[in-house]
Image (cartoon, rainbow, N blue to C red; front, side):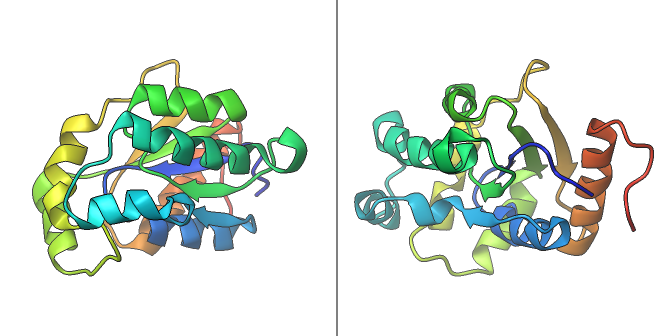
Length: 177
């Protein structure tokens, strides 16, 4: 399967963005980047202290991710980036770099995500920030290229579903098994 558009695997912390995004990149043969790697040290320190980021903290981080989505020379290369992309304004900023980006929203209920967060260790993102992320999350609009995937299945099954959805977006009847 050829991926024509850059993809953002999005959602709140603990929904599986990095795991699913990495597996999806391997499956599709396109580069995967973790949005966490684009955060400056100040953002990481703030979150590690249990303080949610504000829009001012996120703007330079999102611009870095947008530039990566656009690819070298702004050529909108195919790649996958895990990024929370919680607000429409954040997604608009990403689209300003890569207008054809498709958002893959890994969606789940607060209890499931909270359970996942309690069973993992993260360099700087404590589970205590989940409530602020859920409060910040704005639904994707019908004018935003996207689809949602419920996170209750294992990562490999999620990747299978995403590949089928991408094939459907490209107008193909079937996706490779």
